[in-house]
Length: 107
Length: 122
Image 1 (spheres, rainbow over the protein chains, first blue to last red):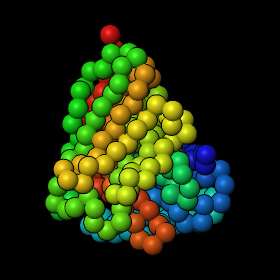
Image 2: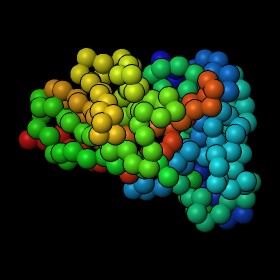
Image 3: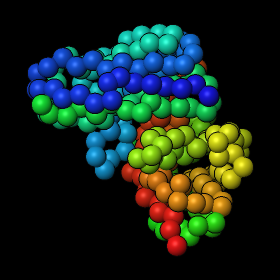
Image 4: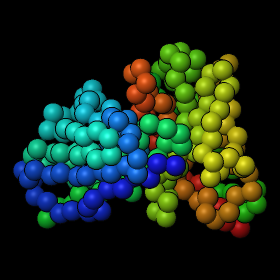
């Protein structure tokens, strides 16, 4: 199985801050990497698919980059509704695997 | 707009079988060549992909659960189902049904059902 790690595990930030979350795969997964946002009590929602493709309806302040083993999710200007947990997921092979998540909370 | 809704028992006794169904509305489960997955989430294990089924009936399961899992599809009812046998407390989780969306070889999970909490306890 491909192992996914994320850093940091949590962070505190203020509205308007630029936030960067990193995801690393245990082997080369090209750009088969997706990012999800999850709020308490809700199902995850896809933000970015295929490493850098913004899902329809997702604000442009979200962006993704990377290929191979190292990937980044960036929120250019954090908004109040962005406080949530963010997880990466690889679709390079089965079983599909997720990172442990990064919780973004209010400073 | 495609919507998924899980249903099933919220409390299962240890050693029994967990059974859930996902009703798909707003589109055909047989349209587009998509696969349909079950994913679970617990504080201990995070998000864990259980397996998927295609409209053809072909399945693939997570090796960690393969001996206990069956995912099936019923196109006449536009739904798919999960059975997990011999459950223990470690199977307590929120269970989600999802569509495996795709563009060529790229796949991602969208949309998701709202999730159903299943507790394994005597």
